[in-house]
Length: 163
Image 1 (spheres, rainbow, N blue to C red):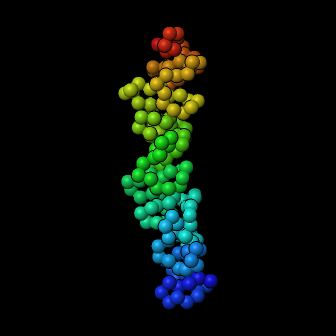
Image 2 (image 1 turned 180 degrees about the vertical axis):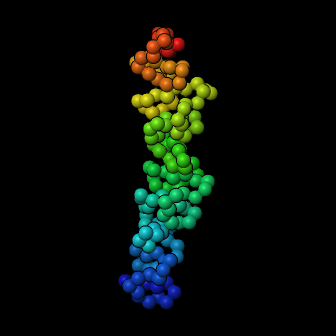
Image 3 (image 1 turned 30 degrees about the vertical axis):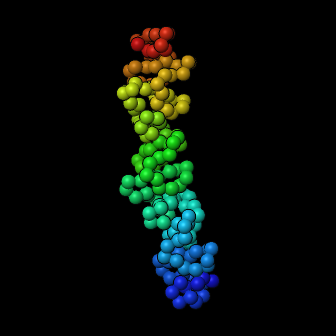
């Protein structure tokens, strides 16, 4: 049973457009602090997973509003991705999905690592790196870290480059 906030009477279902607040057992238009209105079940919830919590509307949303990004770690709409997250198409990821690489400078996912400063795409860590690891060569042709230089290129062993 729920309490109708207007009539203060017990009802079996809340009127359309009102959420059920399980803390007060009442029907509310806006959920209490730290709770979000979930339109799929009309409950006030603490977490919106797999949807995103929007602080502005105090509701769970599939797509975050303009000017915000969706965090796949916290399932919240944020002004910007948190440290250790990378933005791709308004969604924050802890690691960029293939074929993208995490750029620490811009905190975004990039198909091609930026050339200023010069960085290389590391296929193992899926990050843009300043230097490849000690078992790989930096290939200047497409700015990637590779195990061996392609035919027609030679290994420069001091700086581990394919030239």
